[in-house]
Length: 421
Image 1: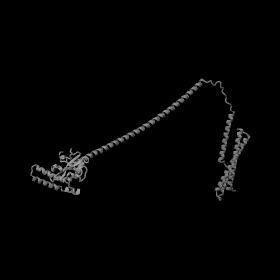
Image 2: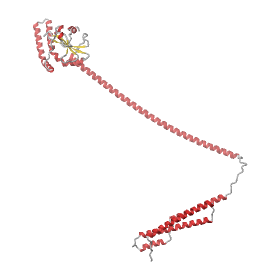
Image 3: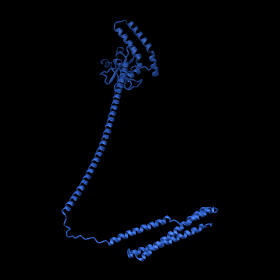
Image 4: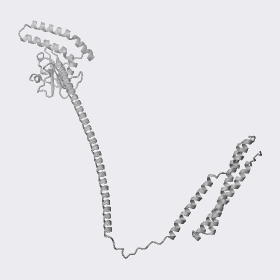
């Protein structure tokens, strides 16, 4: 059995290039033929001539040549691909099988079949067009209707036309009414939806306003309750403070409290020593400021003691522009120790004077006064020592002096001003 020899790959590629060039040349020739055919048809109409038949045969031969070239080209490429995919030392039977497959007639490829189908469809369309054109050319002209009786119409036809016109108008009116009704219903639905939305929004706003009002009322009630509570607490605190101040005033000045006299306007008077223990000598009665503490609004009314013939404090005057009863009580609680010794001595002298006035023997009265003075002095000694330590040493109230030698701010106050009140 003889073996089949295959062309080389380079030869196949050269042949492929030649086929491509041939196809390009045939495509150019085909385009030229198509252009000439169109020009001929434009100049001579659609009449079938011998030249047209010749051109059609040339086109058919050209297409068949293209198809044959493509078939040969595709078969050669398939053969070369099959041969190149096998090894050089492969079995000879496989090569013979490939050659045997290509020895049979080649089937048409897809492009040829599509070309043939397109040609058939084209011929069918052309035949249909030619038939319609022929029928149009050979058809008899339409018969002309005489216009003599055009104005004549049948009564039944007129009635039928009127009925049809009325029906058409009725249908049109019904459609219009239906459209208007549908539009009205849509508007009603839209209006109802808008009203419902507005109502819902209004309800929400009313609910929000009502909730805000309730919150404000609750807040106002809470604030009022808080204010009432604070007011009650403030009143209770003020009452407690007033009671405390009243208790302090009562503890300092007793139940009688401070005196207010018309002869001493704007002054509160607290009597330190009883007038029965004083001589009542006007020359030794005057008013002096508190030089020890220098407190503003405090002054003393001085007088002469009957027992020891020395000047002592009769009364303490508090200026109402500076002091009230509570401040005066606080001042007296802080400075009461300064007047304790004088009070005890004056009390003993007053007791002796009272005893003499009642007719008791003078010796018994003096002995009783001496005993009272001794016991009072012994009892007051620790307090006097503490007062001396607090004041930095004992400071005695200076004796009385003539008016010309009194320091600035001192005034003489008659005892009649105190006694008359």
